[in-house]
Structure formats: structure tokens, C-alpha cells
Length: 388
Figure: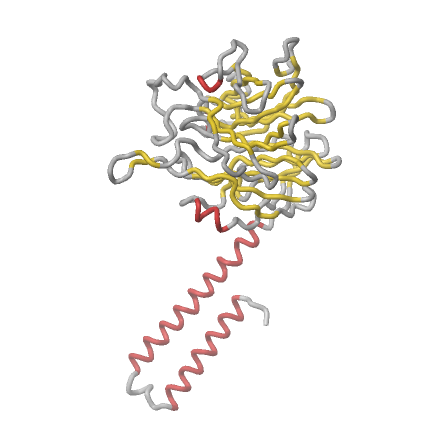
């Protein structure tokens, strides 16, 4: 029988009738009329309660079964891209990871279905408070398949985890859960007042391949002690015995900013995150985001860059200062006309052109996070700049 509200009410009405007949046969109706009346009220209440819950249960199926739509100004926080065949794929922060496709990187079809239709159980076990809002993915094609890393966290705390998915094809949107790459434990004081936990945050992952050895590495981090780097094994998990090392900080470790963090009382003021390493010529370029995101028009996010001859660093800015000691050359910031601020970037080579992408907080749309795409040009001394 089809499950409908009408059928449900009919079934409960029939149950009430049966209950009344049983009471008469047992000769208890007259003796216990008040009890029977109360029990009828209970059954009627249950009838309408279940009917109401059934109506609610049916509603989400209608609400989420919406059609895909197209736009030339997609909202995308922490965007990354990939190309398979003649199709571009964009992934971003969202419920289960937002995804969209394009043939020309101008008109985007935003999918109603997320990358992750089921959130792996290990994520909520590892990160208390995490639900299904997945942050800052990254994607790479290596050794014949696609790998996607993603962030599980709660805002302003560093009890976090970076998960891993794999797929043979982007077009099929069928991803396999590969478990956890790395976890950070919340930094706090124990009962004796001692600091415990990790002094880094396992979010904002980015894969990079060492060209010389075909070895994968993972760079990640947000606030606390800054940007971390660790070698991966052939399964894209942290290699056995590998310890992460800090390769970039917002400030010199000995400098203590006087302005407090306006977004979190736990994260501190080492406002650096969202690393992305891009190989060009003889250098690996480390792009990072400085200062504060996620405040709409009040955000002051900006992008800085340094470079190194090796994946492991040190990454130096144009003045030769190590990014681990607060170095970094400013690459992009808000112009206060079109964009209040911009950050969380990625860099790719598409069809022979190097392309910079990030999200920007729109100055004309009340701070909405929109996709930015700009070509990169290279100076004579091999530093990146945005094409005018």
C-alpha cells in the first residue's frame, strides 16, 4: 500500500474502532468510561502527531530535489578546480562539498547534489561538533586517479581532521572514502594547567607532487603555529614516521601582535592559512592567505607568496625573508571597489595558460563570497603577477 497521510489516518481510525469493539466485548466500557475516553484521546493525539511527522519527513525530499542552475557569478568559498576531458569542475566549501561544472570557465552549472551524499562516520568521531558542512577541499590527479582532500572542523578551534576521497572519473561523481589523512587535537590546558594538544590546525589541505621524485606531499594549516608540510605515501596518507614541519607564519615567532583575533579567542593572532603550492620553472611557489576571512564585507583577507627551489623550503619572499619567520610578498588584496577582500586561492595551468582563482568578498553585493579568476603573468625574474 502506498504510504500517504490519508492512509495513515484511515489506519488509526480503524484501530480506534477495533479498540471500542474490544472494550464492549470485555464489558469494560461502562465501568471504565473515563479510562477509555483518556485512551482514545491518546490514540487520536498519536494519530495526528505521526501524521505531522510524516508530512515533515516528506518535505525535505521536495526541498532538496531541486534542479541544477547556471550562473556566471557563482558563489564559492575556498574554490579549487580540475579539468577532465572538455569539462572544468569546481569544488568548494559547502554541505557535503559544493560542486559545479563548466565548458568554458564562464558559465557554471551548479549541481544540486554534493560530492559527499553520506558523511563518513569517522569524521564526527574524530571532530566533536562537526556535522556535514565540509570546508576547503583540494583535488589532484595522480597515478591514474583523482584524489580529493577535505576539512572537518568547527570554527575557531583546532580539533580538526583532513579526510580523503578517491575516484576514477570526475564525471561519474562516485567517490570512495579513504579515511583520514591527518588529525589535530584541540590545544587546551589540562586539569594541572599544562598545555596539551597540537599547536597547528588540520584544515585547508593542498596536494603537491615533488617533480624530482614523484613523491606526494601535503601542505595545510590555519592560525596557531601556521602552515604545515608533511610527506605522503603512495596511498596519499602521511608517510610512516613523518612529522610535519612549519614552513610559513604570519609573523616572526618573537613578534606578538597587540590587536586581538576578532574571529576566535582560541586561534591566536598568527593569521595565516589556506596554503597552495604551484610549480613553475625551477621554483615551487607557496601562496598563502593572510589575516581574516569569513566576515563578509568586514573581511580583510589577502594573498601573499614566496618561493623555493625544493618542496620542503625554505620559502623566501622577494626580499629574501623566510616565510617561516613572517616573510611573504603581497600578491592580491581587496581594491575596496569591486572586492572588499580576497583569498583562499589556487593556481592551475589550463590550456597553456596559468590561472589564479580565489574567492572575493564582493563590495557591491554585501560581502558575498564570489569566484575570482585571473590570468598570471611572470616577471623577468620569475615572480608571479596578475595580468591587468
